Length: 314
Ligand code: BDR
Ligand code: CA
Image (cartoon, rainbow, N blue to C red):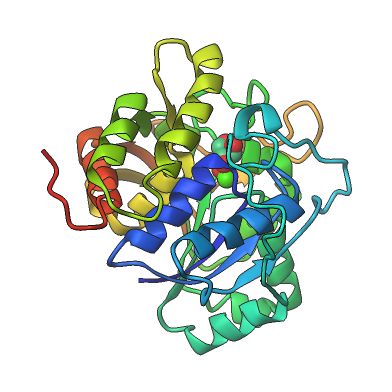
C-alpha cells in the first residue's frame, strides 16, 4: 500500500512514522510535515531525523503549512510532546534536514494516482492547500484517512473538539467537502489504542530495530502527561498509529458511514458532527467513521511490526 503521510511529529506521529516504515505492507512515498504538536520547523527536523535513524533518507520530507488557514495564532504542546516534539529526544544540533519542495507532493501523487492513499495525522492545513492548488488531481485520490474528531465522547483540546480538527477546522471542512472518500479515526477509538509502559519495555527487550531505544523513551514521556489527564492508564494513546492500523485492518474495525461536518465558529470550534439518530438521513458523501475495534488485535499487530527483526511475540 503506497501512502503519502501528512504528520506533525509529535510523539504519536513519530510512532506512526516508525510503524509505517517497519510495516512490510506499507510503502511510504513521502512525509509532508506541518505545524501542530510543534512548529513546522521542529516537525520537519523530527521527520527527517527519524528517517535518518533508519537509513531511509531516500524518502522525501516535504515541508507543509506553518499556521492554520484562519491565520489565528496557533498553540504548540511542548508539555505533551517535549520541547522539540520527540519527548526527551532532541536531534543533534548539527543535524541537517533535507527538505523537498511542496511541488514534489503533486509529482508523487500524479505518478501513483491509481494506488496511492493519503493519511493525514496532523492539522489538515497542508492537505487543504493541496486541494486548493491542484483540485482536479487531488479529487482523483481514491482514499484519504484523517486522524481527528470525537464522536459521542469529549474532545481533548476543548470539551467538544479534538486537536487536529480544532487546529484548522476550515482545512478539515475543505477535505470533507472535496475528497472522494474520507475515512476518519476519531478519539472515540484512538483514545483506547493504548501503549502501556510495559509494552514499550517489551518492545525494547525484543527488537533490534533502529528505534529500539526511542520507543520506551518517547512512550514514557507521553505517558507521564497522560498520568495527569487520565490517571491509571499507565500508558498513552497511539492516535496516529491507529490510523495506519485502520487503513490495513478495516475489516476488523466497526465503521459507520455518515456525513461529517466540523464546526468552524468559536464556542464549538473543531467539533465533529454526524447524525447518530436511530433513523438518520442517508449520507450523501463518502465519509466513514471508525467506531470500535479489537484492542488485542491492534496491540499485538503494533508489537509485531516493531519487532522488525522478525522476533516472535511471546
Ligand atoms: C491528535 O493530536 C495530536 O496530539 C496527536 O498527534 C494526534 O494526531 C490527537 O488529538
Ligand atoms: Ca498528530
